[in-house]
Figure 1: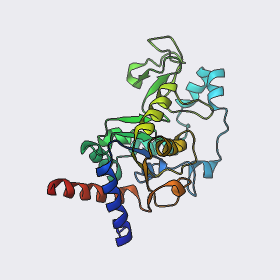
Figure 2 (figure 1 turned 90 degrees about the horizontal axis):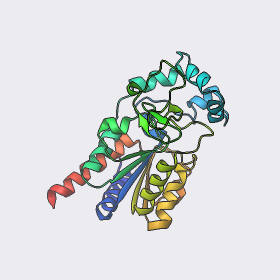
Figure 3 (figure 1 turned 60 degrees about the vertical axis):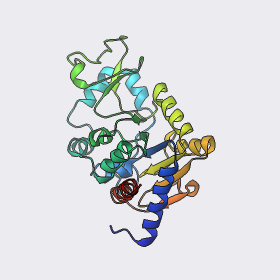
Figure 4 (figure 1 turned 30 degrees about the vertical axis):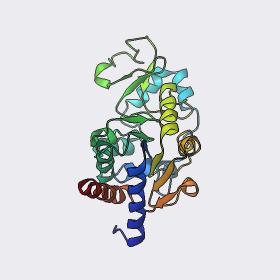
Length: 263
């Protein structure tokens, strides 16, 4: 995709907004991971569109029979299409550019709805994974997170070595509340930001979809959306750039680097 004059002018506006802000954040959604080949859940080619959206009883089923849940999770038949995509996914130009924006000091925190860990792999350091991380495990009692290599799986369900609570995959399930510590972090980051990039999210999944409004109402934040298609959040955004993040974010980095070198 080429950047036309109208789009470039909006990227220039975004650069000015970031340069004048004191605390910038970004929130990313499935559209950003889709650029790395990870299937989305909603939309024309989404997994839920193809196979039907799961009910809201996923977490309840885990609580009722965690051993059976783990046996199903570890089987080769569990969402093979998604597992293959996640195993092969690599950070795209948008992930790399966002990490660069953090390195340059323009973005202080990235809040992501994605569970693929690609922001970390790209080099972003201050990340809040509101829906968890597919590569980690979490205790549902103390909320400590672990790498799978550090938790024995000989006996199911696995037990937390710190508090003896039940361990599940870190990914937040249907019907499962967002871990309290994660939700508070998201709200705190949003309330102090004065410039927020909204990247590839549909804006329909709560509580994540409420964070831009928190930023706007708490601190008058400038909201900037980068998404190939309009979203539910487009009407409240100050700048809307209809482009993939892998196109717009590298152009934004290039502009900011030019400004830094000339100042």
